Amino acid sequence: MTGVEEAIAGELRLVDPGVRTSRERAERLLDPDFVEVGASGRRWTREEMLAELPAMEGAAPDGPRYEISGMRGVQLAPDLVHLTYETVIDGRRARRSSLWRRTPGPAGDAGWRMYHHQATPVP
Image (cartoon, rainbow, N blue to C red; front, side, top):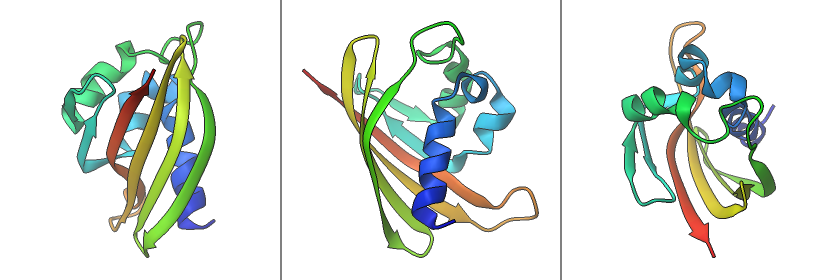
């Protein structure tokens, strides 16, 4: 699997309610230095995101789900991928951009993780 394919797979896992409600599963996908600038303009750290993710939109198995379109990726360096795409959830649309980086580590801890994410609302 290419870096772009791995990053896309990780991005899709992060919108899965089973991952959003499991701190253990979400931790494996977020880089230790993760930062997000959400559609609200709020800046999120990794710890803040992990704590709030189970209560955020898209986490309830029977609630609204993210509809993703136009996902594209570019490998910027051997260990860095940039993804862009759009989402709609509960009638709200956003353009999204993510940086994924591959980190070395012991078995089970190495791999591609989201390093930065930004969401911009679209009227």
